[in-house]
Amino acid sequence: MTSSRRGSVLISIGGALAVAAYAVWGAVHVLVVNPLAALPGSSLDEIYAAIADAGQMFSMAWVLGIFGIGVVLAVAAAWVCIATKAPPIVAAAGPLALLVLGAPAYFMASFGPGMALADTFMISGRSYSAGHLPLYGISALAAIAVTVFAVGAAIRSRYAPATA
Image 1 (cartoon, rainbow, N blue to C red):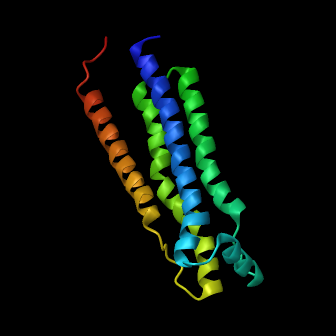
Image 2: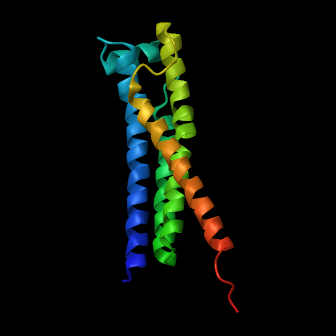
């Protein structure tokens, strides 16, 4: 296996793992950390019971589904890159793009549960834990990396020697 091929395989697998870690972190933040931070002294069971009693929707399936879509796409992208022997830059592009999309996915996944907390307990629907900030930071860094890769590829192709 060439070093470029080995790099593509490692990048593909590492990228899928990074997207999965992002998804797990986001889901745990939305479903566990933020509710507990919003209502200190209450247990998660008490919080969920109060939300259910108030008739509010706090769908774990929605949250897990939103984050799960990214993981499935990351695994599929890794498989395609490995199967097609994609170059390392292509293997990196998919997971980076999914990490960029992690920020809007986090917002979509957290909106309903945040509003359920707000409506049930008459509090703000904002995030009460700073655990979401690294997710947004990772998405921003991934956006910068995608931009750098795109500009680099454009510059390389512009100055590449012509083939006969």
